[in-house]
Amino acid sequence: MFILTGIPTWLIGLAVYSLELGRKQVIAMNKTNVFLPGRLGNPALTIASDPRLDPNARPFFEGMELTAELPPPIGPEAPISEILDLFSAFEEQGLALDEDTANLTAVQGLSRRLEVIEGFDGNSIALHIVEPIKHEGRLPCVVHFHGGGMTFFTAEDAPFVRWRDELASMGMVVVGVEFRNAAGKLGNHPFPAGLNDCASATRWVYQNRDVLGISHLIVSGESGGGNLCLATALKALKENWIDEIAGVYAMCPFIAGKSNPPLPELVSWRENAGYMMTEELNTLCAIAYDPGDENARNPLAWPYHATPEDITGLPPHVVSVNELDPLRDEGLIFARKLMAAGVTTFSRTVNGTGHGFDALNPSVLPHVYYATIGDIYRFATAL
Image 1 (cartoon, rainbow, N blue to C red):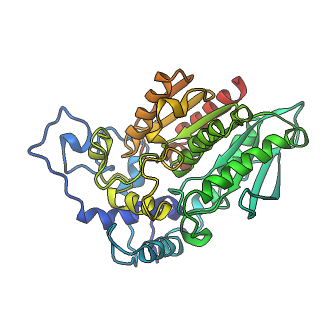
Image 2 (cartoon, helix red, strand yellow):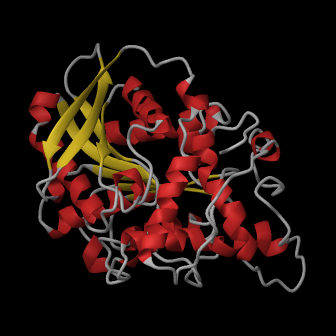
Image 3 (spheres, one colour):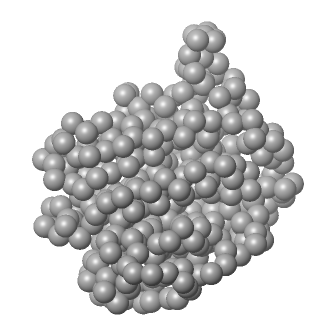
C-alpha cells in the first residue's frame, strides 16, 4: 500500500519504482562541476534539489513521503514472466485512482460517449469520444494515445480523462484509444498489438469523419503514447494512408528502446539520471514491449531509429520534451531527424519540468499544463 501526504498516487507510481531501482544505479563522475547541468555537474542532485526545477513544483517533490510494499527489483536478465508480473504488481499497488485529478471540478459543456470498434487483429477497441456540446461546423480532432511505456495505464485513468476533457473544451473532438498494453491489466500484448490498435482507431476516425463532424485529425500522446503517435504516422506512411493524418504532436516520447545502458548521444540520461525514472525500469518496459528483442532497430517499435527514407513525406510534427526528463534527448534528436528529412517540425522544450509534467499536473503547474493544451489546440487548428 502507498502512504501518501498530499501526493497523487497515479503520478508517483513511476517515482516509487525509480527510488527502489535507482539504488542499483551508479553514476560515474570524477568531481562536481557546477558549470554542467543536473547530475552531470553534481551527481548528488535529485529532481527536487535540481536548481532548474520550476519552484512551483519543488514542494510537490520535497513533500513526497511514501513507502511501498514492492516486489524485489529485477534486472533485464529476469524471465519475461517475472517482468510481466512486476508490471501487474505495479498497477495493483501504484496505480490507484488519482484523487487529485478526479476531484477537480468537472469540465462543463462536453458530450462524452464510448464507441467500440473492431481492430485490424479482430479484437475490440474502446474509443472514448468527447466533444463540445455547442459548436458550429466541423472541428479538428485529436486522436490521443495515453502514456505508460506501451506497457501499463489505461485510457480510463483520471489524468487521461481530464486531459481529453480539457482538450475538447478548447473546441475539438478528442478520441482516447484503449489500445492493448504489453503488460498490466490490459496485457499481455507485445508489439505490434498496441500499435495496430492505434492505427485501427486512427483509420476508423478518419473513415467516420463525416459522422463525427471533424475536419481533419492529428495523433498525439505522451511518453509511451508519444512513441505510438510517431509510430502510427510511420506505419501510415509505409502503408500509403498517411494523407489521413494531418499532423503529429508527440510529447516526451519514449522511442529509443532499451536504456541500460542508454545510447551515448542521449546525454539527458546522465544529466537527469533517476529523475522520475531509471534506466532499469525503462529497459524492463522495452523488454515487455518486445520480449525477443527482434525489433530493437525497427522504427515502428522504436521511432528513434527511423532512417531518412522512413520519415520523408510525413505531415507536420511537434515534438515536445521536458528539460529535466531522462528521455529528453530522444525527442530532440528525433526532431532534428525530421527537420533534416524536410518534415515541417517544431521542437519544444518545457523548461523546469520533469517527464510528462506538463500533461499530468493541472494542480501543481496549471500555467504549464494549460500552455501545453493551448499549444496542441493551435497546432491542430492551424493545419
